[in-house]
Amino acid sequence: MPRVVHFEIHADNPERAAKFYTDSFGWKIQKWDGPVEYWLVMTGEPGQPGINGGLMRRHGAVTGDSVIAFVCTLDVPSVDDYVKKVMAAGGTIVMPKSAVPGVGWMAYGKDTEGNIFGLMQEDPNAR
Image (tube, rainbow, N blue to C red; front, side, top):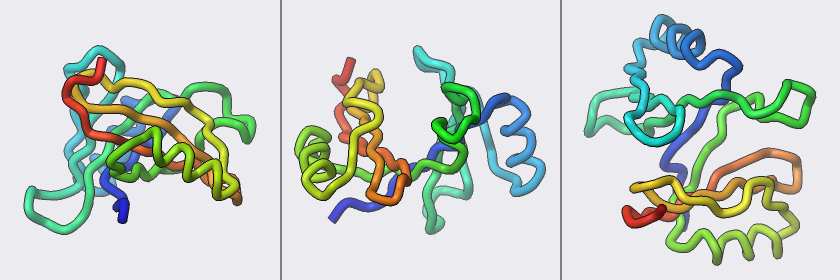
């Protein structure tokens, strides 16, 4: 059964958002050293219950079409298989499968109520 393993916060100003979450909750946020603009969010100490996440620059203006919430990401064994399951269950794919270099494969879906979620397949060879 797929579990929520990651969340993302979409922000117009990631630096400002990072300061907000650090000041509000004490989260540790650092810019990722990877090939895309992304910040890693640590919400607690290793071994504590809970999940960590990421912070990224919002794509698109806030018009009701862009993400203005946390996106929870599910760990799945195959993004391709779960894209088919999402579509068969009445959902849509709003960001097709793409590589997160050195991490895995990612896609975004939308449920029947308009909520966006992520699908992540671990694969360190993804490019």
